[in-house]
Image (spheres, rainbow, N blue to C red):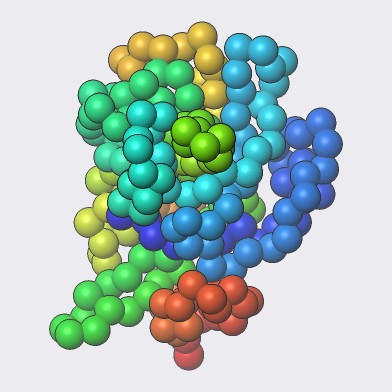
Length: 223
């Protein structure tokens, strides 16, 4: 499970790294929690290229009667998402990149859980594999939401957690976003653990446990 992450880089850097046509509005975030806005890239059949979008974290299927179902759908297992009723249509038709530059996991140490912060060695942003949906209520309320795919961990994450978010290789971004690709068999091979030697992890304080703490000190290594 992935329950918190960061996107500390401003819009100008995101535009440069992800080749966006315009600089998006994005304020640095240090403790993104479920139910909150996340930065995504999507591409529909009408789009010439990826578009920057804001989605709410926690996927709400289009058929849901209550949007609170999204609270339980912040993650989807990469191994089964293509066949699960809640995710299978989005897997084929509504895939997205969820932008991040680090994420948190909690290691069980006896009766307590120690949060750790994971990022790339070069500290550059990357993209989680995500799925998105558009939901509307009978009263006209509309919500665009998303979920993160997770999978078996790499050698680094395995030392403290049994799952990790799917981080896509940059060369696979276009394939994942291509609306013409709807066969899960063409997509499943790119859903693999990200190389452990490209990542680092360090313990941080329990400040991150509270979603209201959205501060640079959330990622400060413990001494």
